Image 1: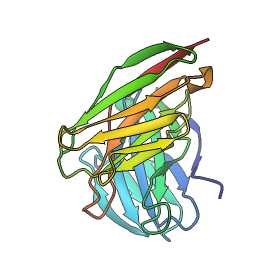
Image 2: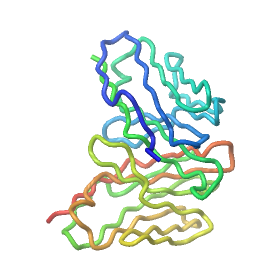
Image 3: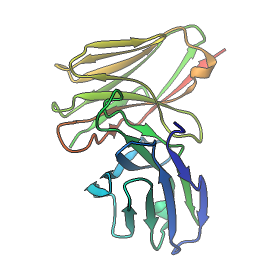
Length: 116
Length: 114
């Protein structure tokens, strides 16, 4: 069990460019979450997948944001036409609906985005 | 929706002393309360969690208490060590829906002074 893996760990992009982050959840975890965290704040929920289905989206997830989990394994989060306000750490997390962990949510190390 | 408030925002203790962080929540339907530790530049790491059918849970030097009537829960760290220095987040969620969506507090920066 290698934990939740995120790539890239750091990304600097110019305003207006598109960026994509990848998340590989803990193997056999069927639930996957994306959160956003800005400096000095707790993580904020963005969206959630159960297997390949995107079941919930926060109002924070504007039209410029899209997330996919095509085969129910890894997930991508794309931000189009980035704005300076998008600068944050994007956290991926996963959980297993059943089993000993009882839907406990485990986070990855995050992907830092800086929009200049 | 759920709102979680966390206090204090910063806490300094001497090594070996105890540290207590408190959180309150607003949604009486919340029934799961995890605590995460986050070190600089890293993701949140789960350190302990408690479900609403339990009033207290302990794991070595860490304990969490829950008062559902008052809608507050607390993290207790005893015999603090310098490596306990980090930001601690409480969270709450309602698992009655399809997802365990966590609402986080704003964090407590704990500094353990050697």
